[in-house]
Image (cartoon, rainbow, N blue to C red):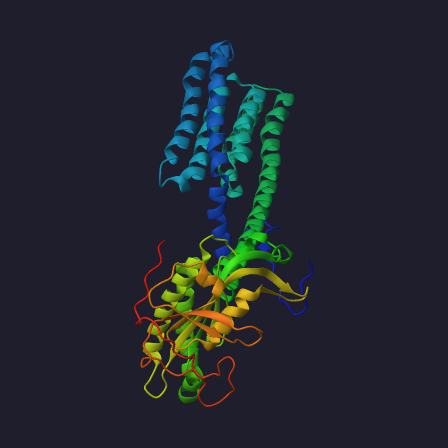
Length: 476
C-alpha cells in the first residue's frame, strides 16, 4: 500500500564502513557488532571445535591401523593432544561467564594444533605431507571456526609459514629436490592466501547480516512504538483488534449484543467558566483515567471521550454473555470512581457531579468511514439510548433502558418513570437507581428531554415509592 501524502517515512538504517565494508566507521557500532558477532557465531564455532577433535580422533585411528608407520609412536602420542586441545577448549568456554573467551580459545587451540601437526609430520621430510597436514589445520582456523580475520591470520599464518620455511631448509641442505620445494611452498602459501580471501568474504557477509539485524530491530521498534501510540489513542481492546487484523480492511463491522454505558459530568460547563481552561484539562485527565480504570476492571471498552462525556461498551469487541449485569456493575463502580474525582476538584462555587445512562441491545461495531479515513465506531439504538438517558440523568443517578432493566434482577430502591426522549416518538419507561439524596445532588447544566433551554432544566419528577436504599450488588 502506498504511503499517504504527508506521512513521514522512518529513515533507513545506514552505517558508514571502511576497509571495503570490513569495518564500521562509528566506534560504538563496531563495538556493538563485535559483541553481536560473538553471539552469532558461537554455536557454529563450538560445533566446529568438536568436529576438529573428531577429525583428530579419526587420524589417530588411521595411524593405529598403519598410517605413518615410521612415526607411529610419536603420532599416537601427539594426535590425542590436538583432540584434547579442541574439545577441552570447547568444554571449558561453555561454562557460564566464559562465552566471550570461546573465539580466542578456538584460535589458540588451532595455533597449537597446527604446530603439533607440523612437528608430527616434519620427521618425514616430506613437504607434501607437512603442507597437507598444516593446510588441514588451517582449514578449520580460516573457515569453520569463524574467527575474526585478524585473529584468524594471527593463529594460522605462523604454522603455515613454518611449513614453507621447512621446505626451503630441506631444499637448501639437499634433502628435497626442486619439485618438492615448489610443492612445499605452494601448499601452505596458497592455503593462506585463498583461506584469507574466504575469511574476508565471510566476514563481509556477516557484517551485512548484522546490518539486516539492525534494520529488523529498527522495524520492530517502530512497530512497537506505533502499537503503543495506537493504544494511547484507542482503548486497549480496539488497539488489540486492529493489531491482530494487521490491516484496516480487516476491522469490518460486526453485530454485537452489548450494553452501552454513557457517563457525563454535571456542572462541568459552569466549572469551566469559573476555573478556566487549564484547570479543565487537569480535571478531564483525572476523569478519563478513572473511566479507563473502571472499564479495564470489567473487561469493557472505552469507545471514545467527548469533552466531559464518555461511552463505554460492555461486550464489544470481545463478546460476553453477561454484558447486561457487567454493565450495571460497571456503572455503579464508575459512578463511585468519578465522584472521587469530582470531590477532589469541586469547589463550593463550582460543584461537580456525574450521571450515567445504560442501554442494551444489538449494535454494529467496527471500522466505519471512507477509504481515506476510518473510525472505530458503534452504531445502534442501544448507543443512542444510553446517551439520551445520560443527558437526563441527575447527579448520582443511573438510568436504565427497559431492555436492560428487564434482564436484571430488581434491586430495592429502583423506581420507574415514563420519559419522553428526543428523537423517540413514544415515551420510554426508564428505571432509575439513585445513589444520592435530593439535597446531595448538584443541578444539571444542560436542558433535559422534552424541555426548553433555560437557566434550570426541569428534573424528572419524583414518584411515590419505597424509601431510598443502597443498591444491592448483583449476583456474579
